[in-house]
Every structure is written in C-alpha cells, then in structure tokens.
Length: 169
Image 1 (spheres, rainbow, N blue to C red):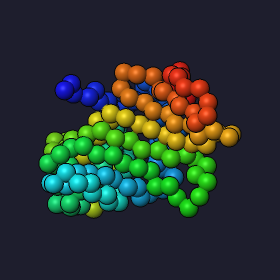
Image 2: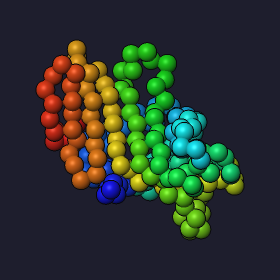
Image 3: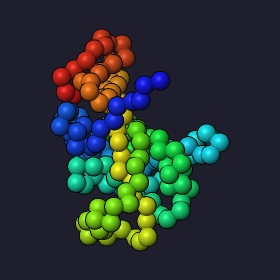
Image 4: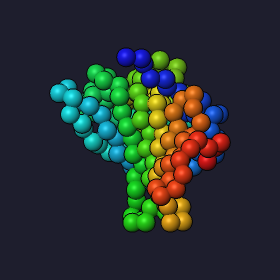
C-alpha cells in the first residue's frame, strides 16, 4: 500500500490560496474545535482542542500526557473539525482537515512558539501534515463539497449538479 502524500499548511496555502484562507477563516471563527484520534484498540476518540495557524503551519497544542497527545504519539493520524457554532444554517460552511500529526521536540521551535503564543506549560505541540481538506457549504439550492489533497486541484461535487475539478475555489 502506497503512503499518502502530505503537505504543510504553507504548501496547501501556496497551492490553493483562496481555499486555504476560507478554511483558516472558518477555524478562526471560534476558539475550540473537535479533534479525532485513534485509541490503542483502534476505536475513535473525539476531544476538544484549540488550533493555531502560525509560521506556515497548522499546530495542535495539548496538555501534557493528555489522552489525545498519547494517542497521536502512538498513531499520528488525526482529523480536526471546525466548531460548527450556534448557526444552524452553517452559513460559513463546515470544514475539516485530516492527516498526520508530528510532535515537535526541537527546543528552538518550541521556544519560538512559546514566545509568540505563551501557552500554558508544559504542553505537547504537534505540527500537522495535511492529507485532506474538506469544506461543505450550501450554495444557492445545492450542497457543494470541496476537497483538496496534496498534488491535486480542488475537486468540487455539487449535490444535484455536475462534478469536476476546479481551478481554486
């Protein structure tokens, strides 16, 4: 089985700047989001967390030895879903990012992050390697599902409409 290609947030932003900005803005509407990780037995664990966009990366920060941090240390696969908020209509759409989380142990990177963010310490910091970004939104009378994967253009599927790749979003 071939390994999936992954990208940094900066690589995603370079490839699809409009789509990346839409996704980032959606995450920045609220402070708390939902992270999915895998437990030892392979079953899903869903927990809350904050995300941070900084230095060309999408970061996941966690309390020391939290279950989600231990999950990611054991199996780096994750999905993070933006808080849908109180708007039942989800006028800003629904977004999620999935991929692999790589724990940061480099003291210089950690010091730079601490200097910028001033998180509660100690903490675990994970840099994301993105394998898929999805945004679902209502556009007129149709449901639009936009998906980006590294090395490919944004692909849009419209419920009741035509499908195909788009040049951006």
